[in-house]
Amino acid sequence: MAVTTTRDAFIGGEWIAGDGETIEVRSPWSGETVGSVTASSPSQVDSAVAAAAESFKTWRKTSVLERVEICRRAFTICMDRAEEIAQSITRETGKTIRESREEMIEFTADHFRRASEDVLRHAGKVLPSTQERSNDKRIVVVQEPIGVVAAISPWNFPVDIAGIPIVYGLAVGCSVVWKPSEHAPLCANLFAEVLDDAGFPAGTVNVVHGRGEVGSQLVTHRDVASVVFTGSTATGERVARDAGLKNRVLELGGNGPQIVLADADVEKAADAAITGCFYLAGQCCTAAERILVHESVKDPFLAALVERTKALRVGDPLDEATDMGPMCTSEVLQRTQEHLADAVAKGATIVLGGGHEGQLHEPTIVDGVTQEMRIAQEETFGPVAPIMTFRTLDEALEIANATEYGLTASVFTRSLHDAWHAAEELRHGTVHVNETTNYWDQLAPFGGAKSSGAGRELAGWIIDALTETKQITFDLAP
Ligand code: NDP
Image (cartoon, rainbow, N blue to C red; front, side, top):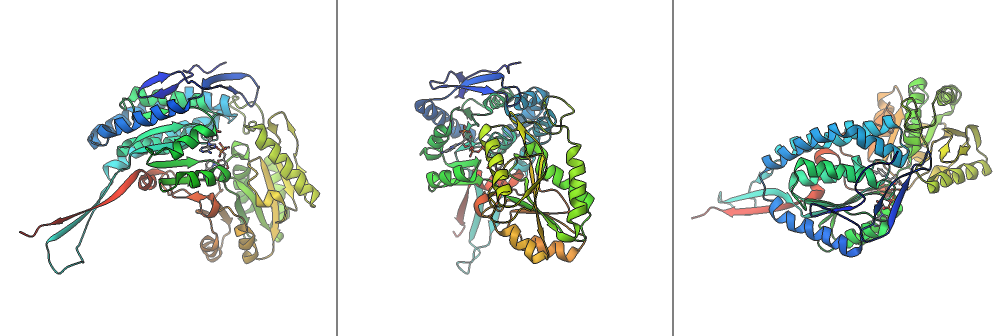
């Protein structure tokens, strides 16, 4: 069944047919056409930025109560349409329907609720004057909406991830131009309908479709003040160069280690590895890309992991019972296969899985992984649990840090001392103790160290990227 949505871009409050190529979206599961959109031409991208810049002039001055009321309405409309949008996400990307519902209900819709609470409590500061010995100065620090925000998003959480800068941007008084992933443009249009129906004024939110060059035009556009980009490290590096002096948040790739120490609860660690390696068929920036197990517990851990992996129901993502669906793109499937072949050629053993049928890759466990293998060094982004062993905690920490990435790590232990030591030594933006790498808290700062990105997002943490901090000094002397 095709997803019914407009095929057009949303510019200045109007749905406008794109002047560019037609981008067809095919289901990674069935290969059927799900729908299509038309790409925006460079002059249409300019029009979208111009509409955003024009609407910003008045939107930045609206009362916070008005912005909050629209956010509250949007929450209700988003919840009403959550199932429809979730179905579209699943058809476009191959995510299981349960994963898509989680994306819409637990993450996306809640951005409206959190943003409307956060902006009401977002306070400035009054600083004492330290420059002179008088009581005449008052220094006020405020955060003002920055202007036009470019939101560029990946396909794996196609609405939720874009929703962070869009919803928070609108709530603080910015206007937004969104370039969704070419792999998931239909759910993006459905979400834009939600924003339009909620009453965000024309031009405050705009959607342009197209491939990387449309994103690139936004990043370099002189009237875009802030870029919030989520995607691969390779694209992110280019965006960082192109963005120049613009404010920006970069949320990039990961190569997360899950460390299982000798005193760990191996059953709990195996449950965490299932979520870490196979949620969204491993196509998560926070996936457990390397499982580091103390040699003394390798056998019971592996047995527990194999048992659980065999129990996974793999197949049609629209089937309510399915635990793991297909991979979204043939490029990532091919890279997964290449990483496995490289690991086997260098001495690793495939314990379970390894094959694929079309885009459906088997949940795979590969043992005997060592540092020089591509699977240990690069982001695989597939449903694979690569097992590495170690003898001491310091050795585990060295392996865990020996990667260009630094997004999320986890450590399993009953020792408070070892947990604390590991948490301090792991060079990752997030460290979880006794929890899967794929654990997120919507109120906590999210972001990466090293090549996993720059800046933090989620809840109020994104506000720095969407505002300009301004100092205002008053001299009260007569
Ligand atoms: P890509 O980097 O391929 O694409 C991300 C977005 O950037 C897409 O909308 C893409 O457009 C666009 N784009 C491509 N080229 C440019 C350019 N030169 N300038 C501006 N925009 C451009 O990532 P994927 O969509 O494949 O997503 C998977 C990656 O995202 C993984 O590496 C994953 O780890 C990472 N990710 C990181 C997260 C985090 O929070 N740290 C969260 C989720 C994913 P188009 O697709 O239309 O070509």
